[in-house]
Image (cartoon, rainbow, N blue to C red; front, top):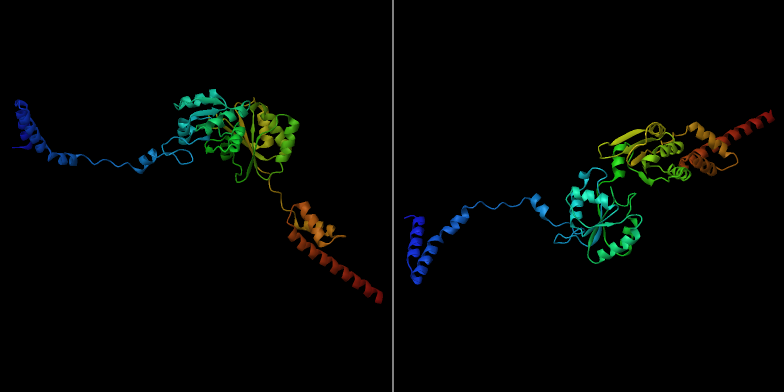
Length: 366
């Protein structure tokens, strides 16, 4: 008889007998018959799939600086970069942090609420902008000290980069509160990447003064920097700012970037005078603008004959060292090679004077 039939017969017999003792005995027999089948049944189940490294990584808690072992964020201020135009540019880590914090401090609650709604995040919002930042900073730091994780976002881009947040971060540092960067989009980096200017050295000047006198003075200071310049500007001042930049910096190469990552993204390239004329001829552009201005062209090396002439003039009544120092400062050249050349020229002059003196003496003897 098959094992299945034995089980069925034993079960039916147990149901027909009223004696409790007999019923218990038969049930024990059923269990005895079924017991050898259990290991076989378990062995026929497919082996449980081991999670791959990728799936395991997704389940790991966040890094120590951002999260505790249980996955809850450690008490700190999290500076979260947000998209500069395209809502899909937000990072996975930024979404995780915004989902995990107790509250989000933001420049404009309306702007931040729209971004959070797109990504299905619901968190209390705390206004923190230029007009209330000092008071808000005190309150937020107190909450963090009490164990809260708080995020701070600006309307677009990385907080503090021409955006609010400096006083908040400064207060956190003064009070010993941890500040954690959650990097991401930045209008400055986006503009630099597409402008076509040297990026190994650049200076971010933020917004230039709105009044022309102050703006020209600041541009004159910027003109002395041997680096690519990055400037933010409001659309209604763009034409005037470009004109002032061209006036002081001349025909440097530049790029006007506008609405980056958005539907009507635009990048104009040319010299500063060309861009100033083009913007002045059209209607004021819409959207915040980032200007990228190339460094001044390297000055052409002076002609060796001109250097000799300047050294010879400087040697009149001066030592070779003094002459070399004067010419080096005037031409912005290293002094050492000029000093060596000045010595050679000085010796040549001395030899020439000796020859003249000998000729004069010979004429006198004759």
